[in-house]
Image 1 (cartoon, one colour):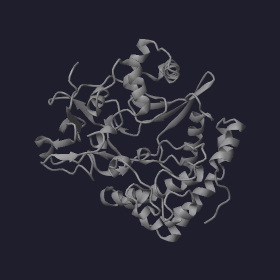
Image 2 (cartoon, one colour):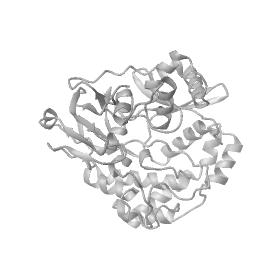
Image 3 (cartoon, one colour):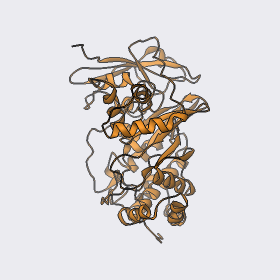
Image 4 (cartoon, helix red, strand yellow):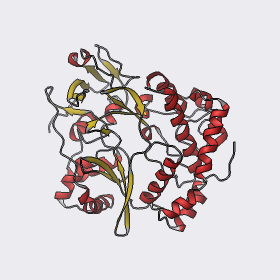
Length: 407
């Protein structure tokens, strides 16, 4: 039985687009550590991989969290779906988080790569072509149903499924651009890919920044296609999720989000310190909260929000919006705290958060009324996007989308 790997070298992009050695990741049974490399610290453009928890310094930075790895590194690895695909192609899953990151290095979100060599990371295989969408969607459905998959397709799926999230998805390439294709899964109550497509179109109309999107029909199923926001002019941008910035293994519920270290207001405070343009960033984040509350996207946890850093244009910025879908469940509270009423799903609660985003009452009210005024046309847009009436009725009844609200 081979000994588990507990040390890896971490590489991140420089302003020129070259991956440079950023530091060393290691762990033992009780704790993990990260040490920035001397060559990284000596660069005039050096940036922290996590501006809150991994500030630039010479000493080792220790963590005792469950994975023994700071979560910014886990952002670059697969989540539930990617792990399921890994298991389909291997007799043994990675023994720890370090092995998991090494196994999928270069295929996850952001620019981080992991290697057993301190001189250079292993170059990832290019994503499969968009022309293989139908075959890879079919293979994904088989994995979701625990069926056997053609080994040749599985070899393409394993590196292409290293993005986070629980739903079936793959990364594909077309004309030098990378896209994520998201599929249905067994047990879906609605046509999730088509609903996500319609919801993201609506979000764009409401002034929310989104990547380019499209929809492809594959027989009796659909695939939602979204361009990767962590790629820019063939450069890989560094990415960190709000979950990683919060850096909490366990999240407790607070009655008031102003006291909650894992809330929208907490994210706003972090962005106030580190964002390139905090005023516009805060307004954009507030607009997203309004839309999530209106549309019933209560699965708005910290992994569904993130920030990007482009070393060629320094400064943190909010990533484009992603994973916005009405939550078809009976839950009435959001995953993140919003305002004075904690996680409560109400526009009154959103209004109470205005101060945390540097907004006056009139500014907050203006954003709310603008978003609601546009979003009230959601039924027509969903219908025009090809949604069945049964899906629209279910979303309306269960997600409880607001109508005719004025603050």
